[in-house]
Image 1 (cartoon, rainbow, N blue to C red):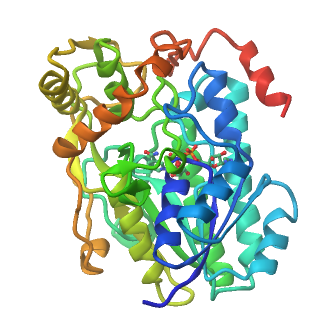
Image 2: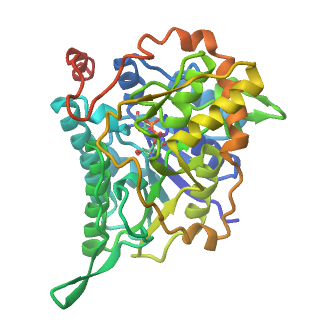
Length: 406
Ligand SMILES: NC(=O)c1ccc[n+]([C@@H]2O[C@H](COP(=O)([O-])OP(=O)(O)OC[C@H]3O[C@@H](n4cnc5c(N)ncnc54)[C@H](O)[C@@H]3O)[C@@H](O)[C@H]2O)c1
């Protein structure tokens, strides 16, 4: 297999670090940029990575010890020239863009958080577009979300365009999307901006719509059966930053009731961290044609939120001998709780991708890994009271000062 030079934007994050390990292990050259903002923003709402995160210096050293060479720089991709200079220096074959504010509840806290999310995410993508616009040989992979589509009453295609008919006439238009938070809308705007950039400059793009990711480990973090602690990736588990499986798994470990919003019928396409990095490596190894805009729906299993809570409760009972209660709470989000959901998924299977991990099995390693850090998790200050309500936001506004100081 041909090895590639890959630049990971957001390399310090949950998926970015796991992908760096995977690519490094497979012999690809790994480069990364991160401004470490998730480390700060998770603390802003009382959270933190469930596993202690090494410093950047420690991360570089441990990567070099176990995996291979890496160049990981700390910088903000929204700043002028940061991407342009770095890209012209290293000349990557592929750039994967994770470097965005990635939580819906955080973006819905208040006006300042909405503005920050819009600015950070859209501006970073525009900087990336301008940094590569004369280089269609560079493959840009933008990590978006299945949440861009909302829950439409039609099959979600894996294509940038769809035929639209009105008053007897028709044309191809961008696939309609109706996102459910400011964060998700930034991803829609990113997709549209990239589609436009592809039309104007012929940039080669894979626009990935990924479902919520779960999991505490990938095989690259293991030495035999034991995990190498310093290789662990960050994992967020609080109400604002934790995705539904990861945050309810911590609640189970702490003996807290699992929270299901509304009736829990909301269905989404989930993917394990292991499958996410496997699939990304396949997409990097198999780029679209130069100048093509490829859309990939990247998820493996459909689950309702209620079903996830039941799986977690079953596994907790089996592992630890107690069964967490399931609490149905008022849904803070504005979303349908019962709906049709049928996204297409052809590109990854056509490239030979097969699912490796299943939630019903992976939940055991998640609970076991988190249990090891039970005392640390107990100390996170705001387990149960950091909530953002879509209509009312969050009351405690002064916390944004932390971000302003950066
Ligand atoms: N985790 C999921 O379930 C999931 C699902 C679908 C899509 N995604 C998308 O995948 C990407 C990665 O998600 P994640 O869970 O690893 O998030 P994460 O917050 O752990 O990682 C994102 C990284 O980007 C960095 N970053 C943010 N803004 C930056 C900037 N302006 N300059 C430099 N670095 C910056 C952060 O410090 C962080 O390390 C995000 O774009 C997210 O929207 C995540």
